[in-house]
Image (tube, rainbow, N blue to C red; front, side, top):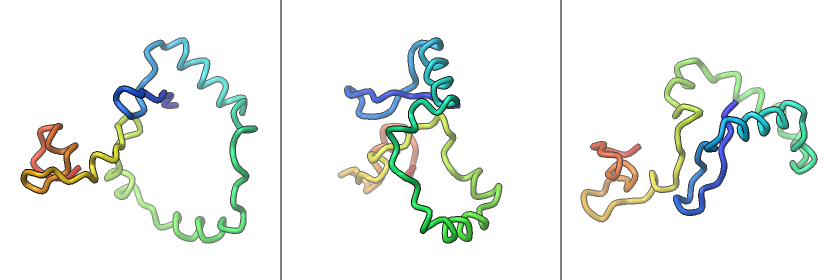
Length: 97
């Protein structure tokens, strides 16, 4: 289980610094401690979700960023120089992320 926290300075989710704290959150998730704060699941959309998700293959999953990776709106931002995603430029990549 990947446990992260919001880092306001970086404006992204970041790994917790202490393994103890991450372990406590992971245990809380396994005990469903946080479920009371979640919205109800949309059961009306379940058949459509099952029909669509049944087409997901291992190849599709392999192309998705890893669980521990950061997903950022900066990947969609356009750099003024070269028209590349700003995140890709900062990461030293030649194209969009």
